[in-house]
Amino acid sequence: MTNSSDENMLRAELAQQYKKLGEAGLNELSSGNVSCRIDNHMLISASGASADNIEPEAVVKMSLDGEWEGERKPSSEWRMHAAIYKNTKASAVVHTHSDYCVALSCQGRDLPGFHYLVGTFGGSDVPCTPYSTFGSQELADGAAEALQKRTACLLGSHGMICRGRSLERAVSLAHRLEIMCRQYVLASQLGEPYMLTDAEWEDFFDRAKKISYGNYI
Image 1: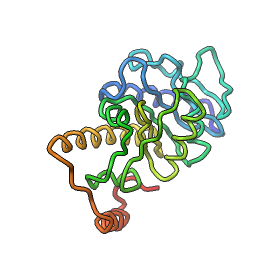
Image 2: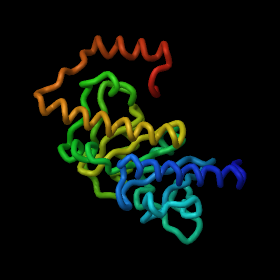
Image 3: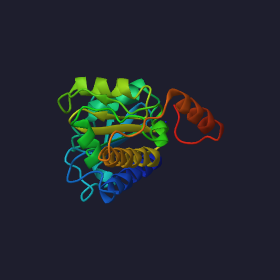
């Protein structure tokens, strides 16, 4: 059981990592949300949180079934975070509305295997889920299903979400996905990018696993 000192440390780290998302330009105003697992519960940024106002005391502790403590309400996307914790071994979840992830998601397109670093999300692509209303169980279920075999996915006409083994790792993955989406959009402006073949992906994953490269499921 996590003690109060450990919980306070997690609250402080969550607030710090939320601020990093803002500093990196991955979330603006009150878009996006961050959470981490704590025993059978989770800590999640409050509704209306932004990089300018997030603080440890504003982080909400809640069950994975929707019961929370304190005066602040959890993010409206808490169902999506909870579904991911219920269906994966995630320790932290990050959701952003970063520009290039949103741009690609609004096309309803997966991020294809145009670059070997796409493989660091667990496969030869990063899938895009169909559009669902924000805060809905349908959105939550779609994201949780996609993240069973990947560490990140795009959310149709919405943004992205990823899971990590720590808050720092999840924020890093969110940043990496934005970079990859930006580079794919830039490459596409020159024509259809080259896509790695099945044999090339097999070689990549074989080599990467031998040297513990990237983030594997």
